Amino acid sequence: MPCSDYKGAGYYQNMYFQLCAYFEGINVEVSIEPTEYIGLGAELTYWTMYLQRRNDSIYETIATREGYVSPSSPSYRTFTNIRNTPNMRVFVDYYNIGVTNRVFL
Image (cartoon, rainbow, N blue to C red; front, side, top):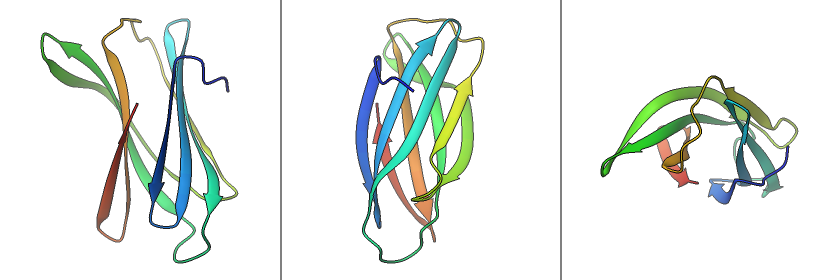
């Protein structure tokens, strides 16, 4: 998956991630790929991904996806039928055992 439109990095508990998003026609493709695993604690990290569009000065969630990521299992998701506008963002909440970390693109 090319990271041509948006790219970010994050860390949650025991894993570093690369978060990528790009438009493919009317779809938004997003990937979460582990880049380094520290080797302490759980290998599985759950996440909720939000696609948002800014209307005036407020971002509104227009779609969500859920899943998990591990050192051997990256996550790839598609948001379909999305109008490509410059006022878009993706963010991900990583969570496990009640602790949440938020990463924005």
